[in-house]
Amino acid sequence: MSEEKPTPVINADTRPFWEACRNRILKFQKCRACGHVRWPAAYLCPECHSLDTLWVPVSGKGTVFSYVVYHVAYHPGFLSDVPYVVALVDLDEGPRFLSNITGCSPDEVYCDMPVEVAWEDRSAEVTLPKFRPREA
Ligand SMILES: [Zn+2]
Picture 1: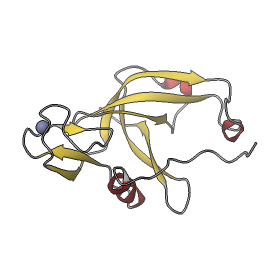
Picture 2: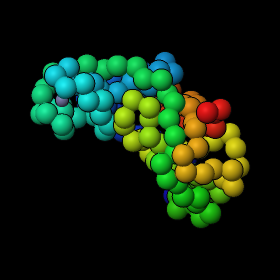
Picture 3: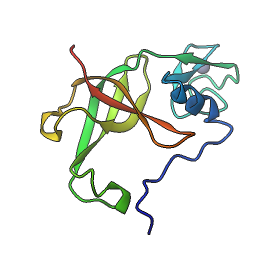
Picture 4: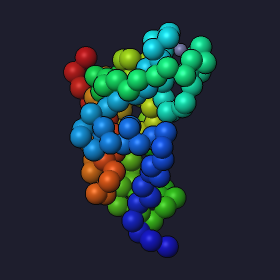
């Protein structure tokens, strides 16, 4: 089995998201009809079913909703990372986003912890939005 970490598969729905990440800008779809900012990307608004959407940059700031600490690597590409944190981050603009908390020890992570986006280049095409601690 390869020891390289898996990378997200980019498709027509998510290409604008990943292209913005490549430029270190976090963008989500915003419904022009009701203003709902959503993730994951979808062709219609889950709140009002409008098809009228635009991509908008967000602050990259949020708080940890919940998290787990992985002490076992379930893929060989993550062996050198354990222990590492997988967290649900509630972004200030609304979406709840699954990512990693970096820049601190797993012991320092807590629910409601203020975080901000931190970028990790994974490949020539993919830059991953991760999150690090920030001051409240
Ligand atoms: Zn809507």
